[in-house]
Each structure stands twice: as C-alpha cells, then as structure tokens.
Length: 293
Image (tube, rainbow, N blue to C red):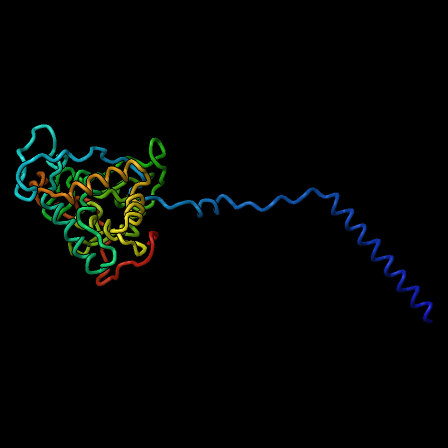
C-alpha cells in the first residue's frame, strides 16, 4: 500500500515537472511583451498648462530714459505727435486707477503676496500699452475690444477654442483678450469682477487688472522674493525676453510715474454691443490654491 502511494507521488511529481518544462518552453517561444508606455492622452495630461496669455506677442519697447526735470508725479511731459502717450512711459488715468484698485484689494485679501501696482502697470504696458493708451469707455472697457492673433500654431502656440467664441469671437482657435491679454481658458480660472458691476469681462481693465493680480499672487507667492517674482511673470509668458521687458518697466514705474489722459473711446458701450461675459455669483469667494486655480 505504501509502495503504491509512493509510486503515485513519484508519477505526480514527474508529471508536474514535465508540465512546468513545457510551459517554460512555450513561454520562451513567445515574443517579449513590450514595456508599457503612456498613452497620448496621458502625455497631454502631463504637459504644462498654457500660460496666462498663451505666449502670444507683446510690446517689446523698453522704457524711455529718464531726463532731469520735475518730479515724475508733478505732471506730464510735452506730448509727442509721433508716439501714443502710454508708449512714452505715461499711464492713462483709468489704467492707473485699475492697477491701484487691484493692488488695494489684494493687499487686504492676500497681504503675504506683497503685490505692487507698479508690477500690474508693467504687465499692462507690455501686453497692450495700457489698453492702447487708455482707449476705454467710462466703465473701463476697452473700445474697440483688444484681441490678440489667432493661436493657430502658425508663429504662436496652437490652442483650439475653449469658450465657444464667447470672449474672443473665434469658435475655432483661442485668442488673447483684453488689456491684460488673458486667453479664455485662463480667464475661466482667474477672471474677476474688479469694478463691482457683477460681471467678469476680460476687456474691462478693472476686471483684468484684478484677475492678473490674483494670478500673480497664486500659490502663496511673495512677490518681494525675486524667485517668486520671476516665476509669476514667466507664468504670464514663458519667455526670458518677456521677463526682462516686464522687469525693466517694473523698475521704471517704481522710480516714478506720470499720468496722461485716457484715449478717446466714448461712453460706456451698451451690453448688447459686445459678448456678455458670465455674471459673477454674488459673494463668491476667490479661488485659493496654486496656478491651476
């Protein structure tokens, strides 16, 4: 009886060994399984998000040299027939009001950020020349609206439509919009109501200035820290040349400024004359957190 059981056990062991050898041989005959690679969708998800402006064009002119004379606060220099006032270093009245109002709001809401209105003025100058030299309506809306080129991948980034044309009038590709040149997707994350009219309009300089300040302060940045300052500016446009241009204007405005009259834009445009931006929810808190809103 014991011999019979031992025989069965030996046969079972031999059978198992033969089966294992066969499986090993079959496995060795199969082609190797390639290593897993991320899908195209996963690659897109890991790609950096678009900058605030979509890395579009900007004004590359540097600040004018300072000349001896009255204090910059004392008044405006003689007008030039060749260049718009904002391109000579002056800040239009409404633009300056918008930058200062945004600075005051963020000084209360995010005091650790240490934003200064001069930084908003530097970005406003480089992005649009302060709304084309202050060509805004009585409520601060750029007239005509300010639109960057189509971001169709020809000379610029390729960003397909994200807003159904609600802000930029283009249902195929996005375009940067307004005095601070937000593309629609970044406006959706950072848009703000800076003039208290219940709307978030990227073409309104009060709204755009507050939205730009909110973005610059994102992620707990302290803009008195040069590393945080540079990171914030590069988030607007990922170009070292852009960074240098904005910093040059920032230093210029910190050294003094003068105001100039707004450009001629007429009365406030009726709501039906331009796309209606979404109405801000009453009492909606600002988004907190990092750069992705």
